[in-house]
Amino acid sequence: MNRPRLFLVTPPQFDTDDMASQIEQAFTGGDIACILIYMPGASTKAVQEAADKLVPVIQAGGAAALVYRDTQAAGRSNADGVHVDTSLEDVRLAVESFQPERIVGTGGTKLKHDAMEWAETGVDYLFFGKLDLDERDRAHEKTLAGAAWWAELFETPCVALAGNTLDTLPEVAATGADFVALKDAAWRSEAAISEVVTRANDILEAHPFPEVQ
Image 1 (cartoon, rainbow, N blue to C red):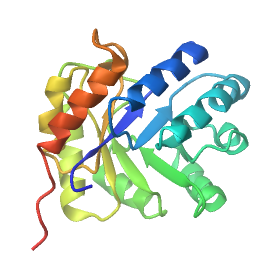
Image 2: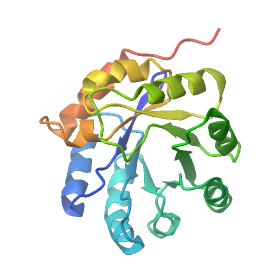
Image 3: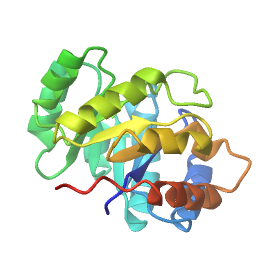
Image 4: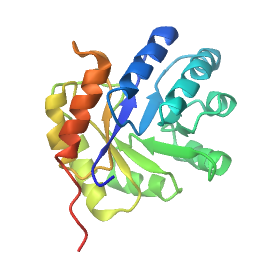
């Protein structure tokens, strides 16, 4: 696919059965590359229980199921990978443990030097945007600048977190990021999740990557 793909991030708190139903509906709306099960602060037991239910649903839809930070729950639930952003050492350990069979992603670094150092561990993607901040209508300027810088210079794929409305998608896609992440824009919309996914894909379809000469 020669344009950015959708990377959905679950809300930090949710009813698992309801989320499983919403995810099933989301896939009827179109292409989704990844869904990150994002449960910061939850116990391994809670993450494990949610992942056991959601991972098969995500995989049945054709997307990669990723678990936020909890490598134990990711492994036991047969998730496709894990997102680790706690420290450089934790990222290295995750890469050693999960690759090449599974995906390891990271992000949240503040400095360009750190982003390059973390990417050198061999992660599968670098995430730009702060998952724990309240989202605004537009993507954060640092997210846009970081993703544009990365996409232009480096081969490791990158993900850019959009704002909380779909109006933010064109500016995020314009960075050249391989994936565009939606969190609040997906789950807090007045529209059905399937409609959100359809509209998002339509917007991204209009922002193909430049052809390499």
